[in-house]
Image (cartoon, rainbow, N blue to C red; front, top):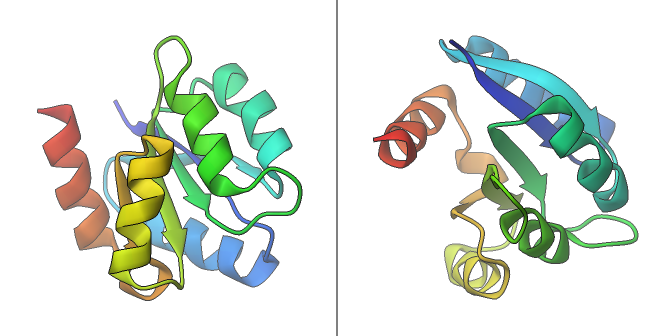
Length: 122
């Protein structure tokens, strides 16, 4: 069974790049895309997303607040925050939001996605 992934980013080019990486990763399927935090909060439960790849900088509700809300719900998905901020800033985002991890956009790759998922699904 594939991991159901919801992509959340307000930049169409990066959304395409995320979809491409997920598409290249065996065992993962994109089930939806959202351009805002509010849209993510509506779609995640409906799509039964296992994993939400969530940009930190979004119009309206930012990724930190969206992650906090997702992780506080019933049967929360795994949430990975993504941004161009350095790892130190990313660690603060994880602590503030309860997200499972932070990854810089430049480091996001199929091997990393597979390795991270193996840790959470064990």
